[in-house]
Image (cartoon, rainbow, N blue to C red):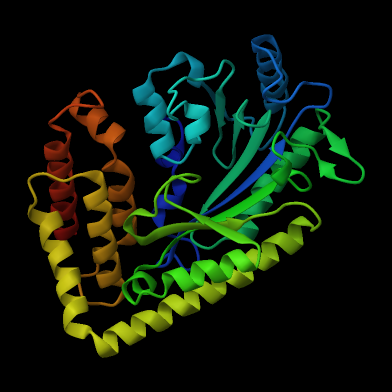
Length: 358
C-alpha cells in the first residue's frame, strides 16, 4: 500500500473541518489545467512523450518552493487497490487512477503530492495543479494553486494562445484552465424536494454539479460538488467571484430549508437523525452507500443540535476511511472480499465508540 506517512493527515488536511462554513462545505478544490508547449496533447502523444513530460515536470518541481517537498507516486507501477485508495482520498481522479470501465492505467500516470499542493501528471492534460482546503475557502485554495502555477510557469513553457489563453486537451477547459469546486452537504434541500430547482438554477448561470467522486459519479449522502462550467472569456477572479456568490446563495437556501424542517417536520427530522445514529452505532454490516447516507442524517442532526455534538473531523474521517479500498487495506482483504461490509460496520462502530468517550 502507498505510504503517505510523510504527508500530514495522509494528504487530507481538509478533514480537520477548520475552514469557513465547514458545517455545510466539506472542502474547496482548485485545479489548473496546463500543457507543455511543443508536446503533443493527450490522444496524440506516445509513451515516450509522456515519460518526457514526467521528467520535465518532475525536474522543475524539485526547484519549486510549492512542490520541493513533494513525493512522486507512479500510478502506472502500483496495484489497483493502491490507485483506488488514492482516489478515495481525493488525491487523484478516476481517470488518472485507471478506474474507468476499461480499468487500465496509461503510461506516465503520476501524482506529485506535497504538503500544500499537488499535481496530476498525464491525466487529460500534461499537468493538473491542485489545491485542496477545508471548508468554503476559494481564496486560500486558489492562492496556493496559483502560486504553484506561477512557479512551474517560470521553469517550463506552457501551451498558450494570445487570444484563447491556455490550451487544453478538452476545449471546455481552454482559457484559464481553471476548475473551482466546493463539496457541499445539502440534506434539507433534498428532504424538502427543492434540490432539483436549485441545481437547475445553477446550470442556468454557468455552474454544474457532480457527485462525491467528481464527473460521472452519483450524489451520495446529499453531497454535491458545485463548480464552474466554463473557463473561457472570463478571468480567474471573475470565475471565483461568480462561484462564490452562487455557493453563498445555495448555503442560504439550505439554511432556510433546515429552518422550515425544524418548524414543520420536527418529529420526522429527529426520527431520521436518531435512526441514522443508532444504525451506525450498532449495524453489523454496512455498504458504503448506506454508510454515506446515514452519515448525512447524523451530520444534519449534529448541525441542528438534535444529536450529541460529534466533531465534524470524526464524521469526515468516517466518510473517507469507510470506503472500500481503505476497509480492505486495514483488514488485509481484497477489494471484492465478501467480508468487507462486516469490517466496514465494525470500523464505524469503533469510530462512534471513540467519539462517545471524548
